[in-house]
Image (cartoon, rainbow, N blue to C red; front, top):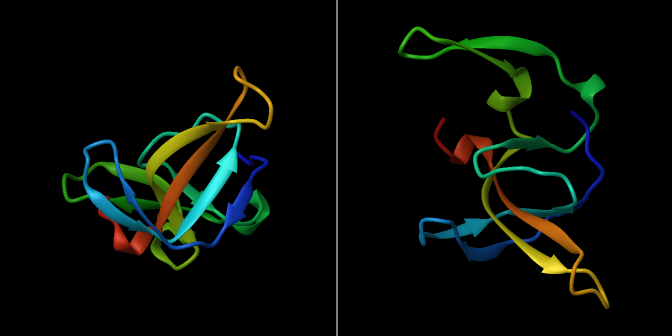
Length: 104
């Protein structure tokens, strides 16, 4: 699915939900509901071709080809911050690493 977001290529040292210190290579600000482990690609759906990956267990894992190449990032941590002059509305911040640097 496509989401509206702000993608910033910024390097930051962050802590994930397990308390591990990581270096994030980008951050995305959005209102979309995403989770750690989800993957993001900066572009549009028309840029993605579908394919399948067969895991060591034999399970078929449908995934875009870009998962295997540079350009796809995995969410490694998340946080939120209040919108300007609001105590009830928040924007979600997702910290990313290139997918080839993370394990499936």
